[in-house]
Image (tube, rainbow, N blue to C red):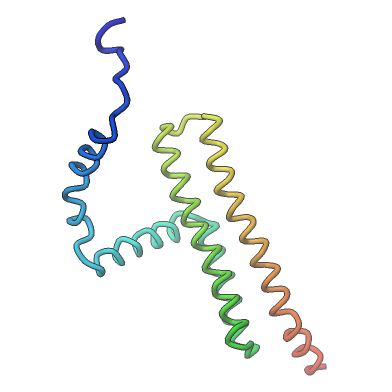
Length: 153
């Protein structure tokens, strides 16, 4: 086997630690303070909002659900449950976007069965959280909505 095709042995724990420390020695320069960290986080949220249709849908539906909760004067706990549920769906949508981007980078946008599994599982996590969010909204928003509708009749 030619030298260029030989497989190198796996790194030892010591050599791995040296490699990681060397690569990370300037990592503090990436986000030198909390403000810069928030700037990068906001860049990720902005990217998802600009490029991901489902993220925009979740943002609009979440805003509507929270606004409706305030309008219906739900208790603080009920409002918090709806807000946390909406936040969870949006956070999972961000993770889904990150996983999809990372998988595409890794497989260079070619088909691979493991890439499909990773993407499908991430999308499944968003779907499950969305279904739960609908169930929470149904349980907390429908009774006061019915009460309001009956009072208008």
